[in-house]
Length: 356
Image (cartoon, rainbow, N blue to C red; front, side, top):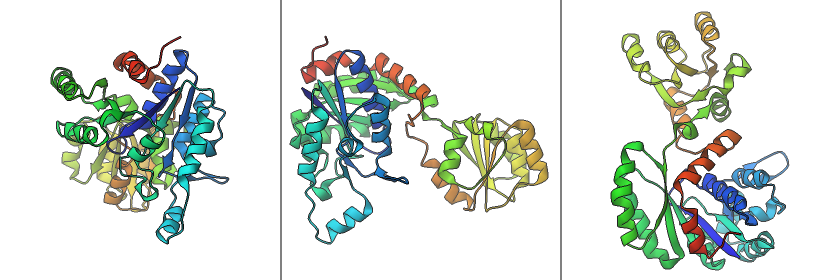
């Protein structure tokens, strides 16, 4: 049986989407697959449980029989961390190993989703390298490539983990950089002993969010037809200038969410004259009747939030840059990108896996 640890250099590089993309393709290639997120620092509280939402989604999407408690066995909640800092011992290592044995039973391959970076989990002796060593798992590194500085991080990790690093996937690569990466970066990393198994281009559709997701994240009051919340938001724009400059500014982008003060009726009117997917009004100020009428005519939902504009922008930006894959159409799009741009044959060879 093979094991593969999916590591990352930073947050929001698409690690969960890569795990699901790999598992879907491996299953189509005839392998019995298992999945596990050994250590989770991104814990959600529901009415009935505490869990890792991405791990739960992948488990449900693949219809895996392993209980969620074994799929994501170590949840580092604030209360757990506080108890450890107070000197209370916690034997997470044996718990992790027992869960791995259950997940891997009768499987050809188990994909392990790592933490956000190599350091997370060190508090409980379960950092990325410690988990990979414990489970004897080779690692595939996911890196977002924005500049040549990404190579520094990749080569540093290679120096740290050695032969356990079997390759790297460069994700969310901007179109102008693709040629340089293929001709210069890929050969260079290969010459340094780091095979590049895939170069995935940036996809605006995958990076976009819906008005519904934005409202869920920001909270506040939603005004408008509930059917409009599935409109796609490609980017954010801030309305803080004069109305005369606003029109040319807002025309630069389509399918945007405009964040502006609830008292800036002039900018709200200008934004609604352009391609706007949502209008977010700060300061807990409801829109005027004139704005509501125009938003109704243009079918643009309005979200009224209590925070100031700067705080709202910072919170909204948290959603962008992630690959939000909890939608079937997005996951299929990502699967297609993996099929086109990832070398599964090379991965299988590195793991000693033979197709059917």
